[in-house]
Amino acid sequence: MPESAGEGPAGRAPLSRERVLRGAVAVADASGIGALTMRSLASELGVKPMSLYHYVAGKDEILDGIVDLVFSEIELPASGGDWRSQMRLRANSARHALRRHPWAIGLMESRAHPGPATLRHHDATLGTLRAAGFSVAMTAHAYALLDSYIYGFALQEAALPFNAETVTESTQAFMQQVAGEYPYLTEIATEHILRPGYDFGDEFEVGLTVILDALSRSIPGDRSQSGLTIGRGADPSRPAI
Image (cartoon, rainbow, N blue to C red):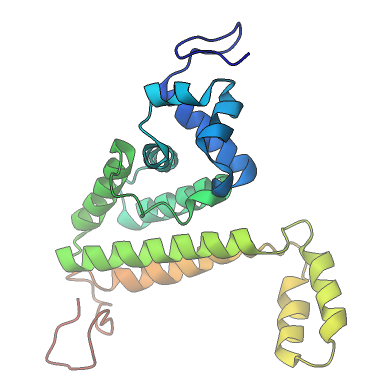
């Protein structure tokens, strides 16, 4: 029989807000965010659905909470270190967190009531960029660009119909279907994707390096900043930011 609020059978921790949220993450990880309901969560925890309302007001609060849990898994950048290394650390940590919880990709920036881990994460990232010498405006641009890349890559990676283990088989099957019709697809497949050791995930570092290199040129005093005009037109009278 399901336990009542605050009760727990032998070997199971008593019900708490933390346990409710961890249970919600487990449901979403296993079956997707669409499967997360108060009833499915109660079943996961072995409690009556009404017991959950002692700890959360409803599904919106649960979504706020589980998004905050995902943010808590991402490494916080440190403003005292090299900003490029810190942004790379954050980006890779975020990508791995989203691989563990792909349901979170579309939710990370959607909550109207962000939790403490979310706010701490954003503040630390902004602080690292500001300490590196980015202007306030460029800090906002850099943050938006990095997050667009991280979330976009995570979304693409989650949607791929193959993984590192099956990419060769999938690509070979695809090439048999379109052989001779698409020369550039054939070229990229045979000379890149089908080479030993190929992993689509390696593309993440390539793109991230391009972004960090470009952003570094917007820091005042950087000798290489002359050509970067993010957010500006070609008007030479308007300074690059």
